[in-house]
Image (cartoon, rainbow over all chains, first blue to last red; front, top):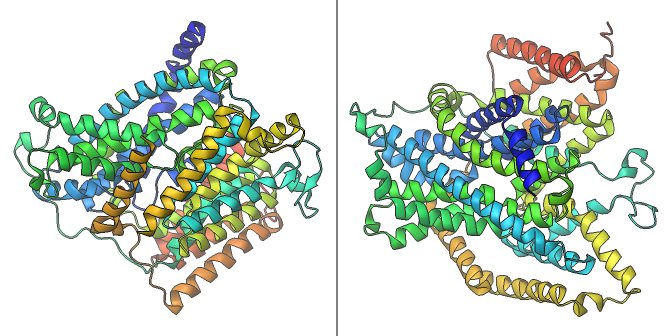
Length: 495
Length: 111
């Protein structure tokens, strides 16, 4: 383990890694600040460009984009009253009123410092939690693995969407899509409709590009033409102390920051609860425990601090179930999972054995990326103030489409994949229209082969008896938890 | 503990529903005939792009789809459209074929 940590350090602090991390951070902040674009589009588009990199470089680049985009979303939330990413929806509540008072600099800095605090704390939790959990997960057999995946699929399907049925339909759709290709045990071709290109299964790249980026292009095509003009100028207070956060101010909101961090870290680990949901939860917790709750909503620092600490805290802790069990809990982590798999770093308990150096370099990199954020955020803020918020969607989305199509083509050199990407784009658009959540589909598509293999291995061991899922205590616990969560959640939502 | 989690999630949903801020994400989705027309045109153009890519070549189709999509999405300034389409096509072609060394379909413009 020590040698992995030492190797991790040397991988992280290589010159090319530092440059790529700061580039990724910068791109992430800028793209996160553009309303309508976030890491869900950015990471799929970036994946083809990372193919020439070594795995640790590529993954750290993508993770920096991920962390940066969460902060970038709050810039446009504060400056133009429109969240750049769903995670920043709750930042608007207090961020924009504060900016209207002429204190946009203070709001942005507060968001930055609490983001960094939340991120560092949850990265520490990630490091400790992942190492401990991976030890336990090493003892999981196929039956336990199948039960755990079943449980987390049920949670993501039921929590992520507006309706349970639609979420479950999306999840089952993902499982079916994952079946295309060759049977993992007997090698029989399944559901390929004599298309040779499908014999390896449906590629990850067309699915993520189509579902999240191309569908967004279609959604934007249908929008009314709107020229986003910022009405008037935000007042800018000339006083210096209104544009920065003093140490005393930061200490005065320490309770909100800390609560937000705890809430974000905790919710990040549960499959299905994303950054935006945990930000709302942190906001309500901060408001309830605050000494002056009536100030919330009128530009109070505590509100910004709790929300930003929470949404950045989920970024690292969402990696815990992903790295140790291979289960992505939210859509962005699912896209990252695709990137990990394409680079041959298969997440799961064995990742610490097979790719120990990569994992530790990711841990160290995630801590260090916050230092980069501290320096680059200022640059990002200035750029976003001037350019980003005024770029019309009519220019951005055609470019997004071309990048998707070319990127997909470059990965597999086949037009079939590009057509598939378009098909998934249409599917994503239809799902958006009828309010089917896309995230459960992607998550269950990614987990489908692993789930199938675990389940069939368990059945082979038990000579076909399904009792194997009830005889192993850990598996039994997760099967029962699945049933309880289904019943409970459907009961709670009906009321 | 599990119960507590479920309760908190439920609370969050209620909070989300109550606060007007969550609605900002999806506001302008009312569809009229022209908007649907734009969507269909866009989808057709995208499929045409993919099918013609091998036949006509990457550079020409990419330039044309950028022009058409920008027009459909509301850009009307021809000078901006053409200059962005030309420069971006050149940039993508350069990055993919010279830096990432990927054979893009040349089509009519084989050189």
